[in-house]
Amino acid sequence: MKIHIVLDNIRSVFNVGSIFRSADGAGSVEKIYLCGITSDIDNPKLEKTALGAIDMVSSEHYDTTHEALEEIRSQNIPIYSVELTDDAKDFQKVKYPQEVAIVFGHEKKGVEEDILKESDERVMVPMRGKKESLNVANCASIILYEITRER
Image (cartoon, rainbow, N blue to C red; front, side):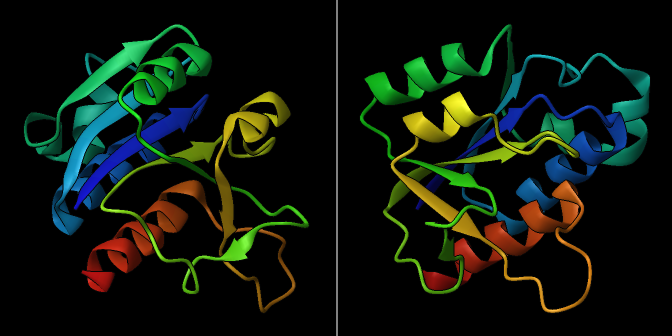
């Protein structure tokens, strides 16, 4: 199992740090693609939350999410975006491929529409309460552990 995480304009450095820790904890993460306004690893606030995980998981910053997806697509890796869309599948009912890229979007705007169009699948975490969505770092943790549990 190989997982590639694409962070599409995540504005909170603390969310990015938490995702690094979850990526290390879940294992199987090949690389984190830090896109657009997403902080690069040189931000001291990121290290404060990541607690050393930036040294455990490979990462690279891209000016745009499209650049990252182009690289991923050139390696024939399927792209799954996490977003609450009408056609999104419950993340627990999806059969994930052996190698997959998972896109997580901006905390308020979600995954951009043009990025969703480039995705092979859309997955979502069902919301059973009154709120419409989870914090992106919590969502990433849930999905990463589900993918690795499946194996």
